[in-house]
Length: 364
Image 1 (tube, rainbow, N blue to C red):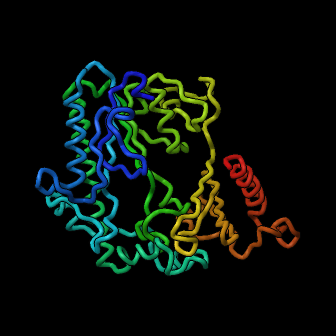
Image 2 (cartoon, rainbow, N blue to C red):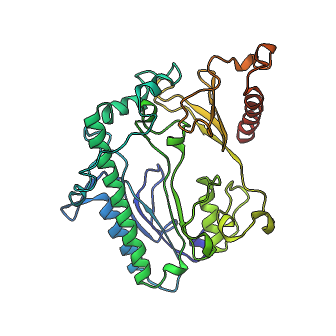
Image 3 (cartoon, rainbow, N blue to C red):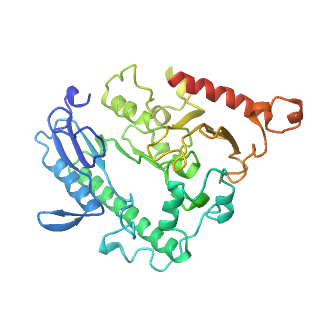
């Protein structure tokens, strides 16, 4: 849509879609590659993050018309692991001194106790458990993997800074929206798991940083805890370009949260207070990656494991690390019966269950 509205468009980096990333119809500039942490370019080894940086800056410097609006997508591969390799994470040599003299602390849920509290169908066959053993099952391994992981993250930070500095050098930074985010969270040993997949906070929360010249000055550098979703990104970009989003799109323009003092005063619906999460069955099978759904709110989260017919409820205010399932030992089929009349969370569980089913039905 941006290209059809006169934008010079580019894609740099990771492309894991089955559809080809093509120059012409979708993009004017393409540097697309699968990439691992190290790759060959012109016969020499180059780190994929450095390649991302160089290609992004090349796009900015070779734009044919400096007055033409542009859109560049920079898709970093790092810090994704190299799953086929024992060491998993391979930073640049210049980063190896980072974090060298410190001990990386563990989150409260990086314990065997937390793993044992997972549903009983979470066995050693779970893909996230297998990857946990690859990366985190000894203290020495945990420290080595985490330090290399953070080094990769720091390299992405440095390359992002180089791209922003190029925008500033060209004099277009203050007329350019910059969005930094990612596609999923990551278990770093929490609940005895690695990888992603499941609806726990570590897996579904992602960073989102927006630098927008239209932002109210008093909000620059501040945090906002409203629920924003990946489906909002396209809506936000189209809004900044002054392009009306198609009716089929589900997202909302995030800029309403930082451009106005009150979203309600600009004729918009109140911002969302919840969202529905779903991960469908994968080809690995339910015994390795159980499909799951969740209704997520600021105070409570209701999880549903449909293949195993099991619900879980967590009080996120009292239990932010999701260690205590409030529905343990509770039959959701009979929760309205008199035997549960004194159950403190009965009304919350029943209301969320009914609402989650309505939301799921609405997206089928």
